[in-house]
Length: 538
Image (cartoon, rainbow, N blue to C red; front, side):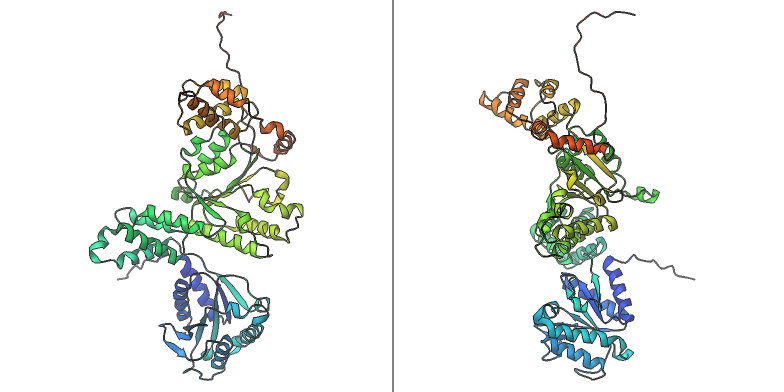
């Protein structure tokens, strides 16, 4: 009788640990692990070392060389130079600190000691060690694993170090952290800690956080409500993401796509792709959409659409402020952007909003004097958009097409490029109706067509702004309902953008012909004329 074994899918962390084990067996002497999660990653590194027949030990400048259980391995080795000398001695067969064994040394604080002029001696010692270790006898094998929050390896070590960018915990790892948090509760609290459905919701709410952040969120939820509250975890997650810098979590837009007036082609395109992420769609072979670029006139619904998608699809909306991620140092901007995109990758399905993207990368197109910072940003964006595997849907908005590089607009980066024009008559009515609804004003008593007629060639934001202005007039006149006359009167004080930016709007429209898809269908507009005349039979 044979026993059927069930094969479990490894987590992302376990997959990377398996790669580390293979690198150790291949006698790679220096691994540079990029992570901010020491405890979680060290536990996986210990498993990886054991799988490659290595003992794992740690070192830092405060505690020196330690066994994994925290006990002292050898005294007086807090100095990095002395520690590297100890590793060399053991690789040469000298029993410094105890019997010789195969050891993977997890070095916590080494990066600051091998960088710059002050780290020249330690950097040279590590470089010499990296050249020496691959050739030592099997039983004396030693490896150095450097933990660092940065992937900036000193150039002297670049040819010796293998950089490993450790991923944030995936859904399976988060679930195990949640189960562990519940298991540590008093027995009388465990049963009600995660009611039906609450566990999955709490796991989804914490995806995208580090292991420590997820544990802190669950602990706070348990302390506050004595159960796992997914809403509280999501709120805490929003705060954590905001603290990263350059990322902003937006609350859902009430009404979703229905709150956006007009843009029928764009909204139909988005609704068609709402189910493309489902399991049945994947089974059928449907390719998940990558995103779209919205180019057009300011104030015509590009940003509003970005906010509405997340509501319609019931996924988080993350706005990326590329300018906030920039640094005056060449290379730092790219690293900051990559770190932000790495967090987005871990979030799973979400909408990523790159607002006014042309402003963030204008220096890469127009030859700006920013020392290559904009070029770094553009390179990081293009690489991520081409190679990403997550289910993040990217919506980028731009007002000036001349400031966008052609490589950003080519097929493969976005599924579609839409041109958002000034609203037509029907759209102007829809925009006004949506604005009245959002301000909780009734449509009765307002002639939408009449207001649409006096706002020809206006932007959507200019039309929507008439409602609060008319409300002021109604409030001053005894808090009465607003009327068509109030809206028309408010319109007389507005100088529309189409007048002040006539040349730029013309350039945008000329570019859109043949380069972008219209966000609004080209239907003939027929004036609504009341006919009180005689019917004639032919």
